[in-house]
Image (cartoon, rainbow, N blue to C red; front, side):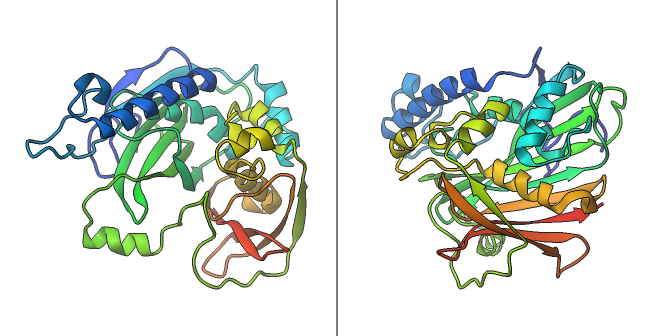
Length: 342
């Protein structure tokens, strides 16, 4: 893969829109809240084009098919030389070694605002508010270090049915500016669920959905699961969400306090999914190597304060490692994933 005209995984070409800098998450969440309200109103009153924000209605009165914007956002010349303090704060919080190497989870933090900017576009058909984070699939193909100048891209693709709505992939890529024609040094695919939306099912959709993660914010996956022997235990304090929010910029109210989380139906604040995934990646340690694929599926939220039992073991299905985190008292799985050398 080169840094030429980007395309989705299905080969669909994308228009590149360049932004001057990586956007801030605070302003994006405000735009996302407004866009979510417009989408909700447009679904309730599709005949009003201003409220519907241009989402057309078919002749029989049904809403037009959902379509994703054919746009990839791009920011070039992203400096990292001045990120040392921020990087080291991240590394200490996530229990990574404090070095000048940007871990895969930190590169997700760097690219996440650009992916969020795609989700708050006026032509993005799903509401940012209420979106459920189901899974991540990340490839890191070498060291990114302080001082590297980066190019970041992000787009949405692979809109498909889910038994509770529709799911979509937000793809982000990071390249070194000095290697514009090389494959991305980091690539992350974040999968989200939007409840209450519908797409036609195909046989391929039904087959893939059978193994797909369920509603991550609501309940653990169906079926019986037996916890392994833990290799570690995390004691997460009530401020864990605020601490990760400070380094990631993701200050979603469900993570910040019991009071703000209750407004969204949670009994207490919950840990960020990417905090738990990146903390598990740190538990794998140096054995992961310099290049690896890192996956995670989220099962149920981690309430704060809380204790998480974690097991990191050799992957029974291939090289690398498998990890899982769960509530030791209830035996309820929170997340699971793999780390595989490339």
